[in-house]
Structures are given as C-alpha cells and as structure tokens.
Length: 305
Image 1 (cartoon, rainbow, N blue to C red):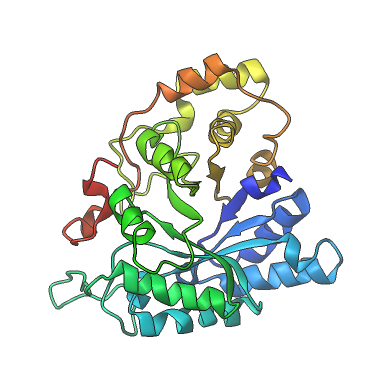
Image 2: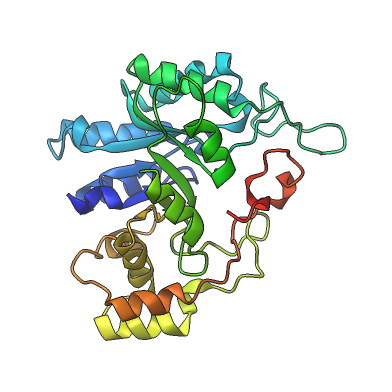
C-alpha cells in the first residue's frame, strides 16, 4: 500500500496515546519515534491497543526507532535498542536508525554539558557504531537499519566500509519545498537508499531550534494557488510533492483535524509543470540547522550535501 509513505513524529507527552490511535484508525502505518522523544511508552500502548481490538496486526505497523547521540559507542548500542523495545513492549522495530552522525559523551543525561554549558562531545566512529547496529539486526531486534542527518561523505563511509553486512536502507533528513535536497536525493536514489523527509510541512516557529530566517512555508503564494486549484490545502500539496518524487514523509501532528487532513494526499496528483514550479521554490535554507553542534567534527551540514 501507499500508506507506508505517510507517518507521524511525536514529541510532547500526554496526547501521544490518542494521537497514535487516531492515526492508525485514519490509515497511517509508518510511525516515526525515538527513545529521546520520551513517549515511546504511549506509542507502544497505542499500537498494542489497536492490535488487541483487531484493527491491525503487528506486521502491518512500520515502526522506526532511533539511536541517540549518547549511545554511539558500540557496547552501548544494543542496550539502547533494547530500552526502546522494553518501553514500547514490542519484540522488534522495523527500522532502527542512527539519529545523528555526532556522538555525545555517554552517561546519565541525553545532553551532557561542561561547567560552561558547552555540549560534551565524544569520539565518533560511525563505522564501529554501524557494526553494532548490524549485530542488532542479526539478533532479530530490528528488521532494517538506516541513518538520519547523514551527508554524502558520511553515507559513503558506511557504504564503502570493508566487510559491510547490511546497507542502510534509508536516510532521514529535512526535506520540503523550501529545502528540496536535490543532490542528496539523487545520490541516495542512485544507491537505493530511501530518503525520509522530516519537517515536510516546514516547522514550528520555535527559535530555540528553528532557523527563523526561513519564512513560514505553508503561506507561500505558489503552494496556496496550486492547493486552491486542486481543492486541497498547501500542506497537502507540500506532502504530495515529496511523495511524487519518491520521498517518504513524516508530518508531525497532535491535532486530530490535521492528522486526518495530512492523510488525504492519495486522491490527487501534481502535474509535471506544478512539480517543476514547486522545485523552483527551493531556497537552500534549512529550518533545522542545529548550529549549537556546528563545531563537532562530524557536524553534517557544513558539506554542500
């Protein structure tokens, strides 16, 4: 089905259980989660409740979990995935990905800092971390392996690793009409790596992690006019745009109306001319720049792609 193209990312507490249950009822099957969203217990409960009531089976769900930056040392990887599985109360995840190519100092906190508030980094060895992920797949804890926020050089580190057993199947990166990722998308497609686009509708306007130099995307005149023509919303047009270019999309919402709306993208298509026009909106500006980690040797966004 096309349903795997569409999924939801969750962060705040409390409403996650109902949001995931509604999403499953609407037809979503790909759920994008992470240990560090602090809500995998509610996501797992929602999945289990919908399995129990006969809505679907476990194999109908595609759950993606993520390895956080403080768990990069190979000896910590399996325990981190097992923590996700224990929290979800599931036997396996469908996809387990390295959330970022930058390692933080392992320990009690997800954001270790020194006395001056500076993030404490850790030596990053992406190939060693990858080998630990491969062992998790071979142990049956995850069906597939992938990465997130990797640039071309970092993907090549994995793809060209001597003795590679399992290739990354996906790279989850920011992708939307204002940041279309043409070069990285082409490279990934040539290497049979699926691009999963986060922030496919742009982002919230939270200055603590969002680059506010980029204007709100869903107010763009072109997206508004194309949406009007198709009797759709700008958000639906933005999602459809990525789906048509082979990018899986993971819009995040807790709003029941938006959760339903974001799924209504399989009953229309954009013309070649419309696709080309939307591609022309690319500003090459990221909403999610993460400048606070830009001095890390593996910070991924210094490269052109």
